[in-house]
Image (cartoon, rainbow, N blue to C red):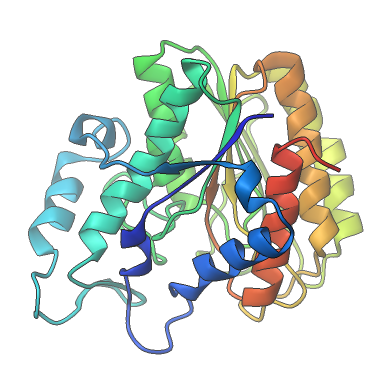
Length: 310
């Protein structure tokens, strides 16, 4: 597989205050592990571009876009707080528009057959950003912007978004809840922030709340019983992944018990679906994961699977 690694130096400059768990070292942890495992030089490295505002409008309201642009601090100004745990510094707007741009660029590269799939190593994350609001460390919904771009620019009829972050992707659900072209499959710890997740709708939304302490083996059973049949029935033409690694047992942000190998396994299952229905088209976008060593190892397993390596 020709797998692209899409990132940008501005992602390291976005900071939300001392001690905030969504920190630049998250990307260092992934890069360092890929280099240590000798995968770094096998990836196609691409710098994320700015997203086009017209692409943002496919997933977000004009009012929300204007709010983020208008309140971005200039050099020397203090952090601007958009919700209780989400802040912007002078580099955050540039990072946010490139985090969304990574996904749309990946879609175009894949549709033009320049690469097979992509991992977007981005900050800030995105899946909590709703159509009209930011929250949960997220400003724009990167995976939703990319999926909408595939639907609108490339005239696809069916795309799937799978989300294994420990927190429910409330923003993604909010943006696509009435769009029959999108299948959203999600596992998440419940009850846990953001305390959301509507009942599953066959062929549209497959929400699987997991109780505290759920193991990787139990997660695999849920995927086999719920995600895979829905994906086979939907036959997606493109698959997007909200790749959060905070369900790992070492991550103190939550209480699930996944291991490194569980992220490799679920990626391989998604790869099998993509091979059958999507011409191998996958864009994966980094969401959560805050235990740095576990994040590095888990993301490496995920990326290795995207590359088609055992």
